Length: 175
Image (cartoon, rainbow, N blue to C red; front, side, top):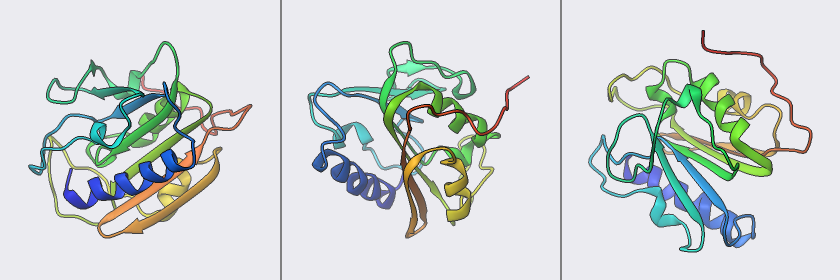
């Protein structure tokens, strides 16, 4: 991740903590958590209070990774209060399916925060497939409530809450 993405996630997380949406004991799942890529040796883990349960998830082992797996097969046995993902979606071949999986592991009333570049140079890790614009970010949050999206610098961001009775708006799977 780059510094501006880290700063943007800090602004969003600070807002969630301040508004008591992240409570003591909350379960946080960071998808694409490995510290790699552009050289910034920070993780989003540092943005959260010590009294939450933070799990870094990635396809490859590395710093900040607690759980290994395929994002398209994402499961979390107990459920999650907050899913975050920063600077990962552009490196996936099928980000829509990944977001669907992230939504599935959230508790009702849980929150999801996504950050992805809307403009940025090619940066393979190991591939670089997509850029996300505000309308695309809005689409990724389809079916959620309290959705906000925007652009800050090179990044597009979105935040939303999973409503009671949420049903996935798409029926997609990986064959």
